[in-house]
Length: 425
Image (cartoon, rainbow, N blue to C red; front, side, top):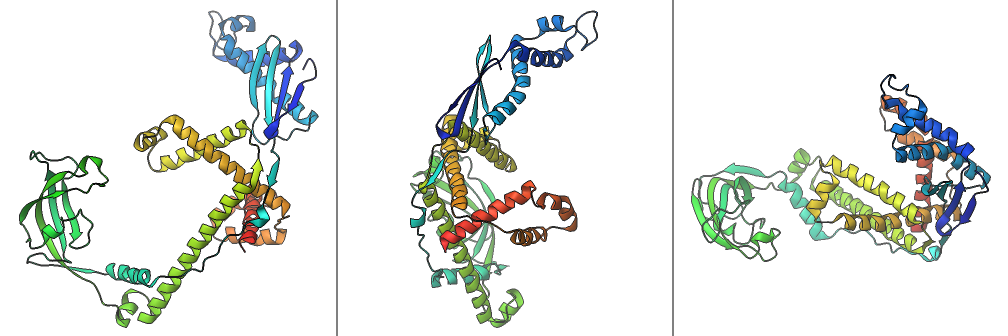
C-alpha cells in the first residue's frame, strides 16, 4: 500500500478501510491473474496455455483481468489490515472499487457490534400447570378405540354411522361437469360431517349399486373460491355400504389391543401421557415467550452487511427445506402468490430478529458467566455419541473432541440451554 490506509470505525461494528495500492503491489497480482486467464487462450503458432503474456493480455477482457488481479491482491491485504489494526471480523469483508488508477479499494469489515441488555432481570414468564380436560381425555380414548373399528359389509339401506364407499362427480347449473370434483372410491362415515353440509344426509337410505343425484350449495367460505356459494349437482354411485362397530373398552380389550393390564391402567397411562404432552407444549410456549422478551431487551445496532449475510443464509436454508419437498423457490413463490421483493423483505425482517436474539443470547451467557465444565461436557458428549451405531460413532467421534468445531458448537448450545433454564425457573 502506497500510504497509510484510511481507517474509519462506524456504527454497528463496521470498519471502513480505504486502501490505495502501489504499482509494485499490483504487478505480481496482475501477473498471477494473467497466467490463470491465459491458460485457455489459443493463438496460431503457440500451444494452448503457452501464449506470451503481452499477446495474451490483448485477448483477455480487461474487466476480467481487473477482477482477477483484485482477487489475488486481497488475501494479503486482509491479513495485514486485520493484524495491524486489531480487527476482529465476524463475516467475510465487503469490497468496493473506488478507482483503477491508482487502484483504490474500500474494504468494509464487520466486527461484533456492541450489545446491551436492558431489563432482562425483570423478565418473568408465567407458568401454567398442565391439565387435561375431561372432554379432551374422552376424545383421546374415543380416538384410540376408533383405530380398532371393525367394518362389516352389509346389504341394506345406509344409515347414520355406516361407512359408504362411492364414486361421484359434480355438474353446474348448465349441466356441465365441474373440473376437480370427480372422485372414485371415496369413503365417508355418515354423520362424520367431513363433507359439505347435506351431502352425508343424502346418503342415508341409499343401497349398494344405487345412483343418486342431489343439488347442494357450497358454503360461502369454502376453501376453493370458484365453488363458494355455488349450487352443484352431485351424481353419486354407491359402491359399498359397511356397518361400523366400535369395540367396547374392557379389561380384556385393554390387555389384547392396548398393551395395558386393565381399563384403569390404560386410562392412567393415557392421562400421564397427555399431561406430559401438555407439559411439553407449556415448556415450548414459555421458551417462545422468553425468546420474544429477550429479543425486546436486546439493544444492538446491526450493520446492513450483517443482515444481508444472515438473509442469504436463511434463504439457503429455506431453499434446502423446499428441495426436500421437491420444490424450488420460484415454484414456492408462485404457489404462495408472493413477489421476490416481498420474500426478501420478509427474510430481512426475520434475519434482523434472528441476529438480535442470537447476539442477545451471547451477551446473556457472558453477563451471567454461564459455563459448562469439562466433566459435564464429557457426559454430554458421551450421551450424544451413545445414541450412534459403532460405525457412526467412529465416523464422528473426532469431531467431538475438546476444541473441535462440533464440540464447541455443542458446548455453546448447552450454555444457552443452561442460561434459558435459569431464567425459566
